[in-house]
Image (cartoon, rainbow, N blue to C red; front, side, top):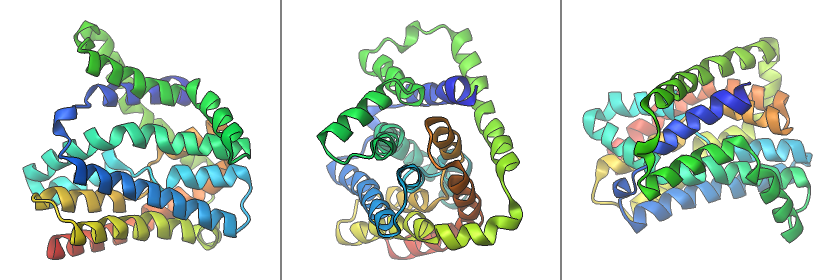
Length: 276
């Protein structure tokens, strides 16, 4: 129910908020997308070095890019940077939405196919094309780009919004039911390289790019670093479990990331504000 109804509803509503006019230029785009691709490459390399099976490789592709934007990054940026931070987050979400919702999912599907060649890409693309989590934001952005979003009835948008708001709460219930708190130290021992990619290397890459190639808008740079440093999104577990990824590994990764990410995000907030 979460995967086929509640999460697609949340992603559809989020996709309707996409505004191309909020994107701040080529440099901003290259740094954000470069960071995403760097994180996926690092996650894939570490997974290969550790001999992960395809289900776990797909899991790290998903979790090492998708930040918990709604419940971690947005509140942190709003508290730290105020109204300017909220505007910067709107721009980040507008720019990152296409890749954030599609790229990691497709990479995970390719990993599940077990073939990193043209046939594997084709198999991953076929699986992704029928995935409701992929279809929902793509459909929403189609309405935005064609200027037809106004034809969607208000009552339907309200209903979808309510379903979307419930998706994270239900996801937390599912994660909590599957989580073995006594096993967190063991989970951390296994997933710390992936947490290092998500909580350290990804924000470090973006931070370094901004030092070398800064934007004129400091707020946008700080907001991007904070968002990249946020813990993995809770819905990674639901998506991963529904498409056949290693749900147990994802559960431990999300739990450890949420706890550790609170400290690492605070460090990146200070560093980005001081040096950018």
